Image (cartoon, rainbow over all chains, first blue to last red; front, side):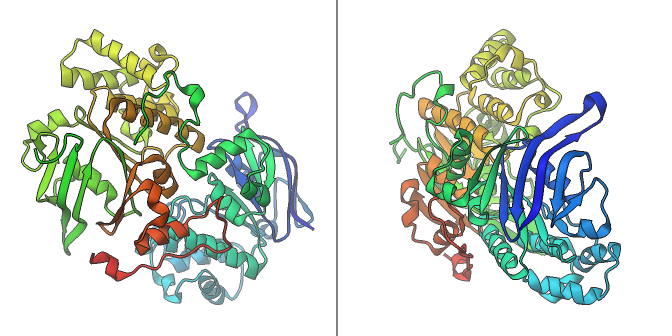
Length: 266
Length: 282
């Protein structure tokens, strides 16, 4: 059964003549418990899709179904609580002058939930943070700990879907590994469905079952994890992105060269 | 000179310390390395002292920082005793630095062409006309298709990739013998990154100069550089040929490699780095 169904989704910013269509026409389905990746360069519209799914961006056409329920431009609180966002930069996405406890309390107040202290304690344990962290401020935490707080804030409303917008690209490699492992554990334990936006295909292949490769607001290809690992992707743009995550490929841009290289490094 | 002419920079036992209210913080401690006509990568996590090392070489550290070393030799110049005036003639002309984000490192109120020409005019005292011609040639060299048009653009009118190519042309126009590139491609998309790197690669090889490439991206450094210096908590834990990185010995290097998700060696769980306090003492 599919958890998320988007059909001919188009999203634009601005009005009238100034309207810019960022997402042109994308259709996809994400099964319950699946992790779906969105990959592409900056400006291709991947975060905009997340924004439309989360209810941040209401200027969209087409149809969205979440958990079998058709979603309109306006949603109820319960509908909004069903999917939660985790942002890229844990330094920018958490209020610097609120304690972690207060940050986690806010969604509970907005949604009028009961047993608040209990919920905060549970969610801190879930993301592997000590309970006394609720009295701390963001500047007293490391980048990885802050990203755990951001994940805790998303989880506190007990969503079924997590929308992850580059959750590890601001983190060091060793911290990235911790967060990716945590996301994997949570997915199994809480039976979550993920949509993961990233520009790094290696990260996506690690976590996702299927990946949509985006360019200029459209999908150029939907590849399975297997295809990525076996290097049997179809589209040339996907290959370019795969080379990118492997590092520098000498001569990958031969067509841009004017002169042949005279000598090679020893 | 004792060493061969292939050595451009020699650093011996360099430390950088910052006095703070709660005592002295050591950002870089006892670092020694040499740079020849090669691409050398410095890799490390945030706070490992890799950028501080790069800046200390150019004497661009904040005024309160204390840099100590037994030796810092750049070609025929002793960087420890060189006067500020001497340093000014070195910076930009003989050692150049490429920074992470062209959006912040280019002057927003000067046209691209003016900024590049400024380097030539200041360091080589050429006429504005000659500086302009050299700038146009340099812009063309970094594969900018319409140099005449780009010359008169302001930094906000160019894309990130073009901005970084402009930075490269600005840094290379005075023919330096050492380039320090501090995360030059982290702000760029992967496809643009390849372009910028191949231009940098070509120019470094063509002019036979040295490049210090500071980055946190293991895959990138491994595939781009000849040698890699791995830094942890202000110390060099290992220096290794890029091709041998897979057989690195130090547990920290191994930990970093295993923490990396990879398309070629997929694994179910990534290894989490266990930090050993002993690494701080070596």
